[in-house]
Length: 123
Image (cartoon, rainbow, N blue to C red; front, side, top):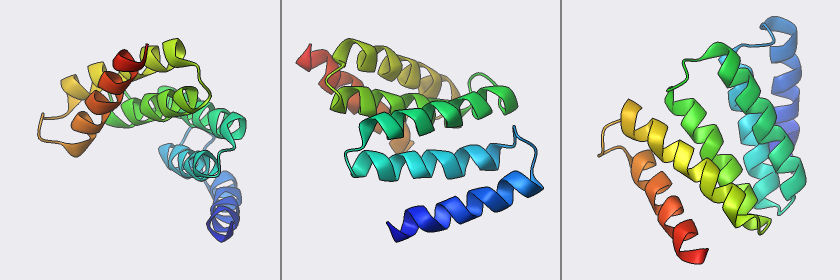
C-alpha cells in the first residue's frame, strides 16, 4: 500500500515534468499495475498495464524489450482472470519480441517462455 502511494506521488511529478509519451511514465504505471496484480485486483492491473503499453508503443520501437514486458504483464493478468486464450496470445507476442530483441541467456526470455509453456499446457 505504501509503495503504491509513493508510485502515485512519483507519477504526479512525472506527469508535470515529462511528456505524456515519455517511457519513464510507462515504467511507473507498469509498476503500479504489478502491485495491483499482486493484490489480486486484476481489472485495475489490466487497466494500468494497458496504459503503460500505450505509452510504450508511442515512444519505443515495436520490438523493444519493454513492450515485451507489457505484453507479459497483460498475459499474467489475463491468466489470473481465467482468460487463458487471451493470455496465450499476449504471451506469444512477449516471447516473439524477446527472442528478437534479447539474447537467450536473458532471464526475461526464459520467464516469458515459461509463461507461454504453462499457458499452452493449461488450454
